[in-house]
Length: 251
Image (cartoon, rainbow, N blue to C red; front, side):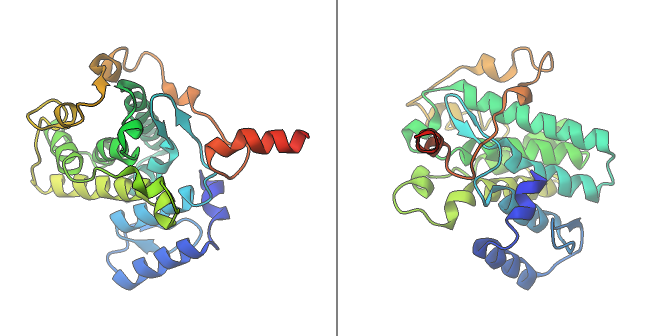
């Protein structure tokens, strides 16, 4: 994760994003990897997640849906730094991020990617939980944060279809940033729909072209951890290119 971030510091898209964040300014709350400067929590989360994702080299989990769970780690790092959490708490936050993201990748048949949605649609439901926990939110506040983010950040699959732009590697980081924003809003008393999954016009009802196995989301939670099943890339390229690259190298 951190290695991917440092390796991406000279990317043009990263430079553009960093300049954008510098122009915005704000309170110095969390550190930007590589630069060492500090920005407010959402902005630091965004640029750090962009750094992790920029080279397309970070980890991958692909079952019914694909995902890059390490995109969410910057939400843990920024809020953890701000709240002065110790290493144990940061590790717990990372494990929670992986567990929830990967369970969502298992729960839809077919995956949401198969019906035209990007996996950031799943990340938007995970990032507020992780950020909320690190910020010390109670259960009611975390539910509100999920509702805030989960009702407002569905992402079209078009970001990875056809001619690719910088949004290919930015869609998930934006969902991570938004999760931190949602948690911060909730901490101030802001509310969101509490049944964003199962309620009227919620996730399960609106995405009715897939069948959701709700038990996958909670069954055996805490007994074992999916983070151990996440994969790593051999090349800094899109996952589906790895087979032809390997074949070419062996010819």
